[in-house]
Length: 183
View (cartoon, rainbow, N blue to C red):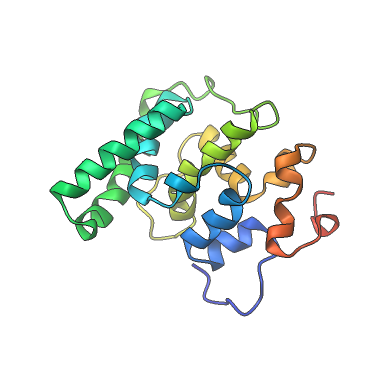
């Protein structure tokens, strides 16, 4: 995380490096998509990433609900401080499986064609995206599809400038849309 927090971020790419991840998630996703009930749970996000990225598919609402229940059950077995140590390993293993088990040409996410809800579910990439920006991260850069997903998370207006749910996102940073470099 960038320690220079005195300069307000102008892009989500800047914000993910300057803000705590939960603040970034809330600003980038919770204002626009119906994901608040689960998006702030790192264990849920890590389990979804570990379970779905190598399948090259997005989880359904039922998958998210089941994963939320699993996370709740897991927390009864171990304390949150132990899960905080395990979560990065789940992310790293998920990335390795994605890289090793999938055909890199199989999934090329087309964010413009995704529904608004599908774009909202992309929040489960937030931890891997944030961790991959850290030079000491255990997260592998992953396949091209991950890099595109990370780019979508950090610069959504560039990839979907014509989607209503994306157009207003820059205003949550306090930056007029016209200041966005891709416009």
